[in-house]
Image (cartoon, rainbow, N blue to C red; front, side, top):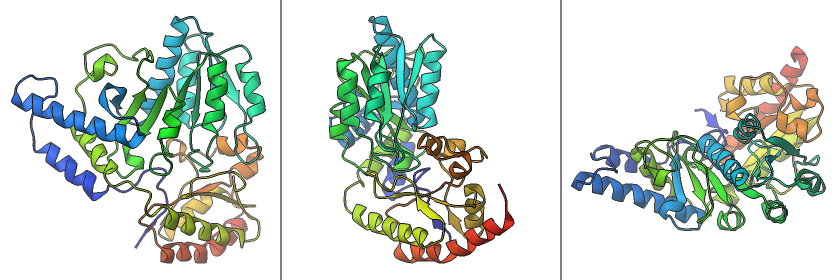
Length: 380
């Protein structure tokens, strides 16, 4: 049986999400139609919206906009906030964290293509936000500041409150990528200091192809595309009702139960990694969510380690699924100050509630041999 340790890329679909999607698939009706079937479809969609709002801790209503996933939610939030703030007279500048997900950096690039200047906020060697550098980034003011609450590769938790407070003083709006935080951290304190917040269902055991953008009431957002009235005019097109139902079904299963067990398994894995000569944990000195362990083995390129693990029945990754297959060093590890060779050695293990002690012990048992073989092969 295979061992799945890539939950930060996607988590297995939970039974409640599958059941909710099957129920929604058996019903007909466009949420925009005014007949009985349409009204029933609208009711189901609004219940899903309320469920996502409850996950954030802010309630539903028109504050929650369904998207095609976390990437669209990030782009809609960052670009939408930036353009609206610029139109209101804010400086055409966007600030992003050096270790942020490609979706965040892609959104910043989209603003740059519209005449914005992008500032990259540095991190220290553990992946923590360099609050001293934040002053430099905000010195000339900004339209929007964006950062991830939890890093997708290392699991390092950002000091969102400190960044948001500084951004407010500079007159900037704040977008938070909470894709990796959902289900692992309370979201209400994060939403309390954010203007927009992005989520993705499939990171939580929901279906792929559905995400959400929460928009603080009263915050102006420029829609990315023109078109219909759906999602209160902020995301035109017929809604993905089946995906939204699956998202809501996933939310119903989330709780803090089981998180400590996952954290203990991750610590067990870390001890096994550090027992290997040349093994290290990236971001180990910073606050992290309990499910993510990013490691490296001196002289063993991460891509080769991951492929060898796969042959042994273990699914892990070298970083963001959006960049998997690339032989380039991890931008996250480079931003943390690792050299190119060390940054290519990164391997990410991300655990979920379904993982067991026996699975982790199996990984610990095979890792030394894998690392030795990769080193002996001299690849990279």
